[in-house]
Length: 161
Image (cartoon, rainbow, N blue to C red):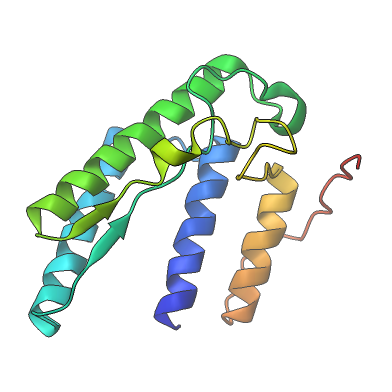
């Protein structure tokens, strides 16, 4: 699997886990992601000691107070707020691990506040996806990579235009 595809898959999996809330994002999982990032950054430094390395944080996927998420994402305000807080924890870990490794950190969260998946269609930068749509996107990427998920594809719900 190419590194680009691996990066895309990681990003899609995280977005799906965040939006569906089915994975149960724990502090342990966030810390484990930080440890893996530190290992990867150390390996990059070992292989390319003169490289400029940047870690890109996640944009605002959900609003801080969960307002406006019921229509497109069917999330209650408390669920959206919980997931937003977990994303903030993840970004804090990414930032700290980047700094510890001497890498740069690119904050995409601040510029994207107010343009999350629960914002209006003409404002948002993050498109909302449903559980079925997420399974289809992940399945398609894995199929292209030669993996089988064992999960039958589900049609994404029609969205009014």
